[in-house]
Picture 1 (cartoon, rainbow, N blue to C red):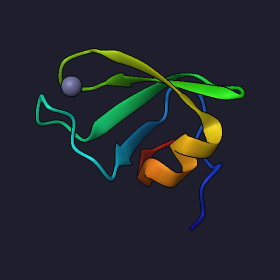
Picture 2: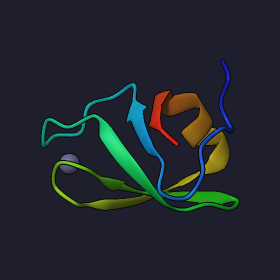
Picture 3: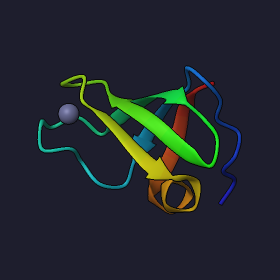
Length: 62
Ligand SMILES: [Zn+2]
């Protein structure tokens, strides 16, 4: 799928829903690892880019 179009501040939808009920995340840091913040509860998660590319469903806003 067409990934890699995300950037800092992008809102992305993940395949898996967070326990809080939100599946939308904001990208707050990019690099080898991607840091994303849950739009529902504000929790931050750091995941490897490769892993992130597999888990991303779509980019909501760039
Ligand atoms: Zn959450």
